[in-house]
Amino acid sequence: MPSISLCMIVKNEEDVLARCLNSVQDLVEEIVIVDTGSTDKTREIAQTYTKHVYDFAWQDDFALARNFSFSKATMDYCMWLDADDILLENDRQEFLKLKASLTPDVDVVMMLYNVAFDERDKPVFSYYRERLIKNHKGFLWQGAIHEVIAPRGNIVYSQAAVSHKKLRPGDPMRNLRIFESMLQKGTPLDARQRFYYARELYYHQRYEQAVDELVLFLRQGKGWVENNIEACITLFDCHMALKQEDEALRWLFFSFAYDTPRAEVCCKAGEYMLNKQRYGQAVFWYECALRNNRNARRGGFVLPDCYGYLPHIQLCVCYYHLGKTDLAVYHNELAGKEKPYSKAYLHNKAFFENEKGRTHHADACDQ
Image (cartoon, rainbow, N blue to C red):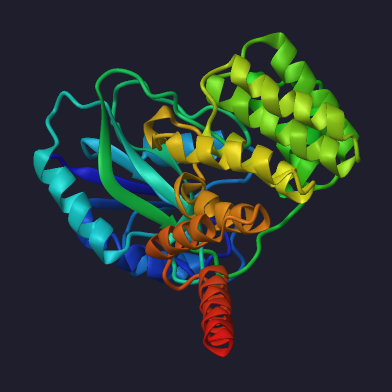
């Protein structure tokens, strides 16, 4: 069975570090923790789990810090986690199955990263990340922000997932500050970094600048297809925020130039038509979303609700407004199968039951 070094970079994580390590310490053979300047009890907590605790001067470069952590690993594979990540019990079991089946020829293991959750802790935003990387094979992290190791060689996809469970917000300006510091120093941004810089501008409501960066990113033609599609979605959001609806739609539909329509794009189009009370067109797009097969292995950002629950709950609304109550009820029930706890589903169900009761009462009175 292969051995694994867990490699982490941390700073001021006293509230979550033990939770993370408790969820994984018995799954790995070595724990390497690199502290980048904690002023709380992070270092002391780390030392109760491992003797391999190192200091590293923070230089506004995540790749540099992660590469340092990997350089201290001595096992067959390096695994990375952030301090606010955990492996839930079912994922721990899947991880053990993965480890038992892992053969020496595997270079990279991709695992789902669940980063947002609904009220019942069901993932609503996920994507695959490189999680286990063969040690001593020349793999290096790249990118000061949104760092990545480009997978190559023999790549395996695992059923195990890592869950990102924040307890507190991070520094909302950190990523934008690092990007703008890089630009001030004349550091060129590669295609991936430009994409993420543009997204930071969007998050900070600097929509016009975000549009400029996203258009430049797409025109350079060096982006990965999933990032190209996501750039088109973000351009739609930017132009909608700027009240430039025609331009927004143009970019949303331009995403089709890169690949078949994603359910996420179809749901955006459906939402636009629904808000315009163009219910027939909204139906078309939500039905398109339902015909989409979810494929997280493409590597893009995945909103699982777009492949079931969301189209069904919105089709319920559309069909009700179109006077097709039977279809509205049908799609509401399908939404309920996806999320029986959904407030929207339960509200609709009560509404239709009330309407049915009123109809039966009226029929009885007519008799």
